[in-house]
Length: 308
Image (cartoon, rainbow, N blue to C red; front, side):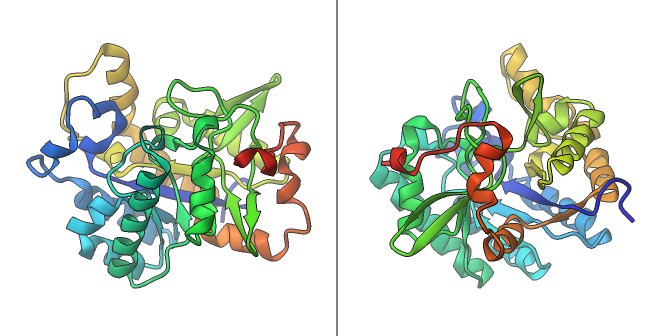
């Protein structure tokens, strides 16, 4: 029995190695990756055990680089009934790629994932949520390549990502050629006219559990599902310590020792499912609801005409 609500929320994990986090971009360039200790299999295995103990399925946005080296891990995730989705190949932010480079990166990663999992990959999340005002063209690439949804837009102001004022809940972001692309945005909470981040990554680790729980309950009062995401390295109590500036060190390492307990508590109190499953349900009964998400929440909707 779930304590607070029967509303089903999205749960996802961005599967990458600890050294591929954006905080380490200047310390561990791709040329060094092969020589660094791999830790993702152990942490993903821990997450899979936690989910299995509670009968919960989730979406795993996996890097193509990881799939190329740990194909059995991708098979294990898929065999456990979880959704396999794409996180790009080499964790390059879209803001550092051309349209052609991005298209190749996504295509390469998707092929590796589909080969390893034996299933179709319909979802994508950009490294570091890097679909921004400058990179909206990436959505057109995803639509052209046949993806069904994106989960890369965070409707907040941030030093690395975000499109402030964009819709806060799932909506159709782009249509064309008889296809449509859904957006499942980063999860936020509205307080005093401000849109604040909630329930994912560092926000889950660093902020009190009460903040996450309150944000999820607030979304349910709006009649909307919430979304929780994390990275496997965020559960690694023995995560290698790298030299970072003080603030960056706090942002990256803070709260890791408490994160597994937070996840387990969330799974006890709320219901979760894979992102693609929730969007398939919305797509089947959309009737204009998710399409008008921006107007319903008071946020400015994303204009289809502004995507080119």
